[in-house]
Amino acid sequence: MSEDSQHQNLAIIGHVDHGKSTLVGRLLYETGSIPEHVIEQHREEAEEKGKGGFEFAYVMDNLSEERERGVTIDIAHQEFSTDEYDFTIVDTPGHRDFVKNMITGASQADHAVLVVAADDGVAPQTQEHVFLARTLGIDELIVAVNKMDIVDYKESTYDEVVEEVTQLLNQVQFNTEDASFIPVSAFEGDNVAEHSENTDWYDGEIILEALNSLPEPEPPTDAPLRLPIQDVYTISGIGTVPVGRIETGIMNVGDSVSFQPSDVSGEVKTIEMHHEEVPEARPGDNVGFNVRGIGKDDIRRGDVCGPADDPPSVAETFQAQIVVMQHPSVITAGYTPVFHAHTAQVACTIESIDRKMDPSSGEVADEDPDYIQSGDAAVVTIRPQKPLSIEPSSEIPELGSFAIRDMGQTIAAGKVLEVHERS
Image (cartoon, rainbow, N blue to C red; front, top):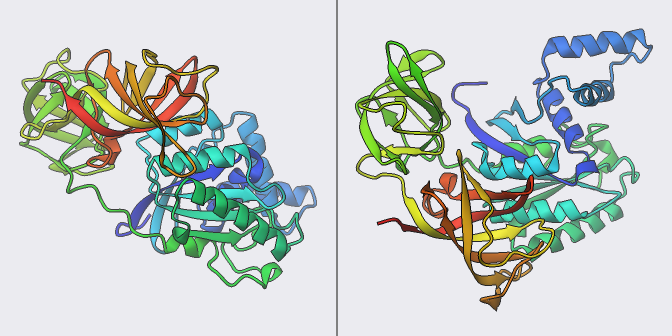
């Protein structure tokens, strides 16, 4: 990865059978991100089996086989670079995990590629992922109309899918002006890294060009420091060392910092990154740091570290917009599932359902509804059962979104509209 390239987190979303993994594999392959030794190994196997000419498909088959056998080819966090950007792919094959990672990951995606199979069109998960992407503030969408090889590269089929997806995007108020549609075959390689002769009727950008022309993400350094704590260690000779990833702002040695909701503060003595001491750390850096005067039992996972003079908010209650993805019955006031926000997991009660939104228009559909159910979007007031540090999404989006889990599954996703701080 080049030092001066900008970094982007990219979500690959869409229905499970529409070819997401194949597209990821193709991108890694075309950008030279699958290690050479892995390609070599596959090339040798291909030749032994008389499948010379070394097929990309062969690599992909092996990748998927290895995934099934549980060999660690981790598509959850693959990286590749284009001329403009270093990309990290935020994608997990499992739908439930995908939702949770997309919401609470240290991997908030900046942009997304929506994969829609030309032979199948919009499927239920396509809708759900688009809705989530919209709720979680993904701005730009690249729509890959995949499997064009299966429909004989017919322009009319492509047009139908584009029409169908455009309607879906309009329904959830995605700005379709900002979406680009590209006919591709991830398997054959059409329009991923080079223009395909099979689609001579298409003269727009191909996938790599569209990725290159994504707008640059605004680096969140002008926001105040926010560093959710993942773990707290005691290291002999140093003392207490909290560890986490800086979401926003900058941490410098000598800073006075506050941990919330534990409500303790001190001065940053040292910052360590990749086993080296550094004078400062920035968004995206994973750091261990030592704070003068803080003991191991003073702070815990789920705390957020920020400047002592601009400490992280602690919610008495907060108002949020949520999307219910799946719930076996209905959700009413008084429901108390577990909220996953940054590194915190806290049981929270839905105190009131303030209004139900029409997901297709974004308009208020119902003031004070009695309940909400799967597929509904609503504004709700939430009371954490123990102190929770969380921020309005409009101010610090990195600490403003959450997943709601219950019964071993992600029930809903949401973003914080406003925080009523504890007094």
